[in-house]
Amino acid sequence: MVQEHTALTVALEQLKIAAEKLNLNKGLYEILKRPKRSILVSVTIKMDDHSIGVFDGCRVQHWDVLGPFKGGLRYHPNVTLDEITALSMWMTWKSAVVGLPYGGAKGGIACDPKKMSIGEQERLTRRYVSLIADYLGPHRDVPAPDVYTNEQTMAWIMDTYSQLKGYSIPESVTGKPVEIGGSEGRICATSQGVSLCIREAAGKIGLKLKGAAVAVQGYGNVGYNAASILHYMGCKIVAVSDSCGGIYCAEGLNPYNVRVHKNKTGSVQGYEGSTNVTNAELLTCKCDILVPAALENQIMKANAGKIKARIVAEGANGPTTPEADRILYEKDVCLIPDILANSGGVTVSYFEWVQNLTREHWTLDEVNVKLEAKITKAFADVHKLSVKEESDMRTAALMLGVGRVSHALKTLGLWP
Ligand code: NAD
Image (tube, rainbow, N blue to C red; front, side, top):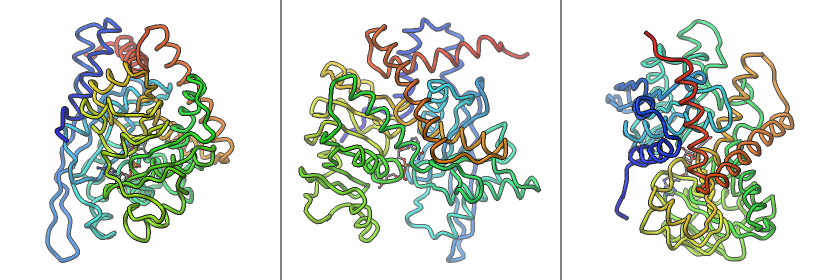
């Protein structure tokens, strides 16, 4: 499929729409269009075969007027500064929409972790942290997992940062394993938030979740856990996919068994009783709820008109282009935007940070109760504003996020 956009052109177009609706001061708009700081690094490591590996990395810190920078770290061959800048901007709005005291950031390294050993991934992570350590820290910038990084990556980040400072600093990173200060519920948090938003949206449009057909694109942390939680809530998971392609089964799939198959064979494809489909076919398959949970720019002008789902819940960041947004809105599809739908991840990351700072450990029940309260309030705020503004939910969410950040920026003023 021809790309209509880059992630950054999407993020900038979204900001433009929100700025116009908010009648935002031109100077504030110009400030928010750019990140406060972009750090480019060359991450050089010893490879297992004794050669030298050189990888381009970056950390983009968008704005921090509501609190320290916060955002994931992505390892992917196609990582670019442009993409990471867009993702950092979405983090700023996301934290503001849920009311978290954070700014937005994102990091990335252009690499293919599938082709690297664990040792190479560890050296890559530690070297990257050593290069940007001066700009990290519990009150400066707190990384978290994203595509192809996980709990283990976060443990290496915590250890490297702590070793450089000379003492243990669990609050320097979130998404860590529970044994070293991670929060209960963090692994499932993003998908828990996606599922809560779907529940709220289904209530608004009168869709019964029991038996509702769900298609999920991407079968990693967000996609797999969303499929499992929605299955548990009574939905029928009819299609799932990963980077190799997808599978469809009208009678419904068991997410756990598909996971076992993927672990064994490397892909969801070929799962017994299902039909192989492409990722493009998955997006337009017959379903009630679609959860894109892979990468950006998946739902575009070319395929938006063919989407059959009544609810699209963006587990991924930036999966829908502005043209596709308009087409879905005209088709009366309820699109729950990324900065609301996948905000459960940063919300429980915030809980983890608070637990680390206060040296407390909350139970899973405590985490889930607090998460539900934050997500349902954010959903209600966004939905109410979309009704008032007669707009789609994305525009309403952006108005809330951009509005709160620009207000803080104005109040703080510029120094000197
Ligand atoms: P992950 O690495 O755990 O999983 C990514 C999945 O996407 C894998 O199954 C991979 O096979 C699949 N994939 C990759 N390329 C694909 C393609 N072209 N088509 C279909 N599938 C493809 O990553 P994740 O943490 O689940 O992140 C997925 C999305 O969710 C990203 O957009 C990320 O920014 C967003 N997100 C993640 C979190 C989090 O807490 N992990 C929070 C908020 C948003």
